[in-house]
Image (cartoon, rainbow over all chains, first blue to last red):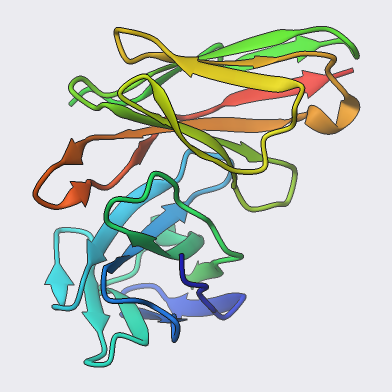
Length: 110
Length: 116
């Protein structure tokens, strides 16, 4: 599976949009981009995933560049409960593993 | 909605003892994954099963073994426990769709193993 690169930490003001970037320059055509988050010592929580089109659900939006070498997770109105480590993972559709990188520690500031 | 259930939630064992962790996937999910997360570390993939067969193997020590049963629940068996095995152990499940491959995986709340 392709490697991902994320900034180690970010801050965001409460109520503002949080934009979390991820680089995956070696992604191949059959690999999906997944986002998970982990709130202190809880099980990782699925947020969203996509292949090449932008995706939106009740939690977030995922913007994937046309060349698919990078993506951005957008939390439209960050709350204090969004403080967590956010992981960007690329994974073959038929793959039976998720490899977590180091993630981005997002702190939402009141 | 039903989630992934892990038991026990907490476990304390002494060095050289054995431990068995259990994972009950979301109903109709056929794939189970195991992860280990040490203090201050990111989750590390250990092993996965699809339809009761091992499908992928990560950094699982030889002292550990796992299996998936006919009802799709899975057990992680850990022997000759070492202090360094103290960690959170997460299980996740997903299902395989012939049209699009594996769906997103959902994680349980984990088992905290402490080896003393």
